[in-house]
View 1 (cartoon, helix red, strand yellow):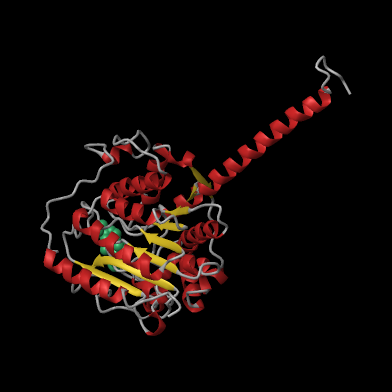
View 2: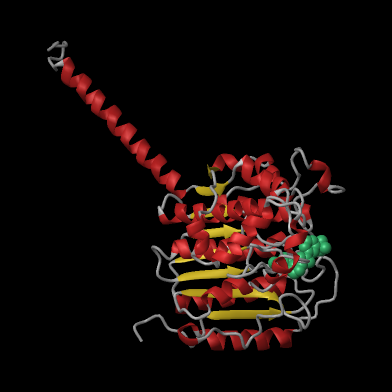
Length: 407
Ligand SMILES: O=C(CCc1ccccc1NC(=O)c1cccc(C(F)(F)F)c1)NO
Ligand SMILES: [Zn+2]
């Protein structure tokens, strides 16, 4: 043992330093570990984006969304996780095998005309055009949602985002409303492996009928959809009277709205209703579909929302500090959709991002202002205060009938 002038054995001195060093490293490691677990998971791969870019009705939208998020430097504050294809077994947990087999069969034929009749039987026409690689697209976008759900199950994160998911119309045995495989249902089924009470919130312009139908008879999954409800507007379901069946009665909530609603009415309505849902249903995990086709400037020309209105709704949910799965959905003004989802991504990571759109591949799409903000239009708002009070009263009345105490 070396003896230094103070008579301490230098070995023990070194070992003290050594312990100090190890203790510091260990502490740092737990801090990093904690941050890692607190980091937002962002599902992304070049392949996923490249496949989703090919979707006819939203050409290159996946690339525009991802490029803006990357240009704002947000990916460095998130844990980027690669997706995988949903397995046949996972897809079959909800969808009928004959439908999925057919989808696979015709996705790789460019002479799909000869399957015309069968295709129509499975909803594969008009709203849900056949295109090459359709099956791969559907299994990749739903695999991405499943991987996001798995990250929440492993508790390696609090928030997991998949902007290539949110296809809420797909039914178990047919395609609908441009949705082929219902990634949201598959993600919820994955979460059900661990969580008992799951809350699904649908902020898209359209009623989340496919998800609602999948869980309308159970009290374990509560679906809450805010949407335009007007005779002749797709999908035509989601009225106030649509409250679930059997054990699921009152665990389906529908908030039917009219054209022109703005952030100032939408956000407080959403937050008050979700607050009541939190009190009575006491969810353990949240799935939020953030469809952007309700934004001002969308070709759907229906609602008059901005990214801030949707942002406040998501922020309200994130304050609950529950594991949260964040998904995309509709959104047909591609630059506004990218603006909105980049804003929501920044909000989820707790980072401020500047108004100026940063230079990047799609910069030109953000002209003439090149700003992040989506501004409300001045379209007429058909939602009178009286109408909103009626809807709110009916919805609160229904929610108050559920109880998750041992009652
Ligand atoms: O956004 C949807 C589905 C919208 C939909 C349902 C039924 C039939 C067709 C559609 N999609 C459109 O109408 C559509 C899709 C892409 C672009 C447009 C556009 F014409 F508005 F740009 C419209 N669900 O959240
Ligand atoms: Zn929609």
